[in-house]
Length: 383
Ligand SMILES: Cc1ncc(COP(=O)(O)O)c(C=O)c1O
Image (tube, rainbow, N blue to C red; front, side, top):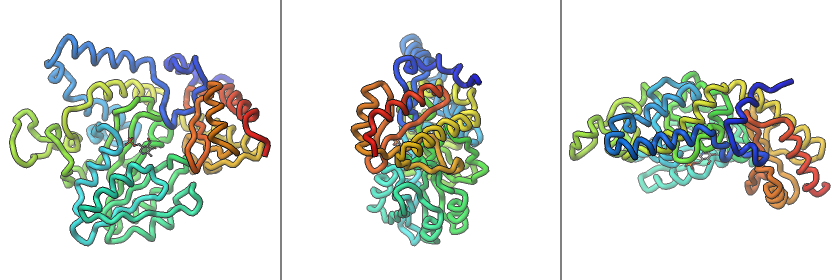
């Protein structure tokens, strides 16, 4: 049986050089990224300052519109930013923690950058409440629900947890947050490009993520979605002149926010990174996330079945409905095994308190999975 997704392999030069199973960390570079970079450099070299008026200033809008279908949100609702940390800072800076509603509820297992940002707002009155995980793997919905109440300003939840690739059941969390008047920011970094998303149907208020992983977009291309009917009610203190309704009027004093996605911008746009990221978004859109998901479930299942046959501990949910694109294998001496796999050209990564993270993507062959598992068989000391 031929796998139609493999025709994309030629677009990713690194695949000729190693077994690349690390797209949960850094997706492979599409060949077209180089052409995008070249286009940016050509404009800078030949058009100079005129390039701003010939497209550069609109790069956030154009790039965000390529992302919108992957997030399941309308065009014009995605702002490009530097990274998730900046996106979260922008969102939290729009909240007022001086009244009784001053809690930020976040998962213990959330990616730490979110927690670092929230902790910084304690000086402005925020209280950070952590939702504990019973197993270091999952964040069950019940413990979220009992911590979200009328004192909650913001709930931050990762759709797919970065260590275990467990999917959190976010719908009841969003419903609960809305019932008590709290906002929800969903971190979709580990989901976008591997899980079909319909953030509009989910009713999420804000979503944040980046392009380094499944989107194959490279660094410097974070994104921030704000529900269109909510956007005009948020006034971020962390802002800048690109968020002004009339940036080139250079009006002094307090900002008059732009309407639409520009409202959540800061200063000079990161044109080169966002142009480069478009190459990955185009391919992921063309391949189609439902096809990516179907293949991912099949190949991650193969890895988990092999692990089970060897008695290796799997730190990723078995159930397809609750598993993202990565399998975390907690084998004995996993840091050494990871280093030796990389030395053999099987590119994976290792996370403390988790194990080896292995992730096929749409460009992965079944033979590559078998080769990686065979290498692990040789390296993992018999249990
Ligand atoms: C869920 C999640 N959020 C955020 C980040 C990173 O945040 P930033 O874009 O600020 O580097 C990562 C991984 O790098 C992640 O897995």
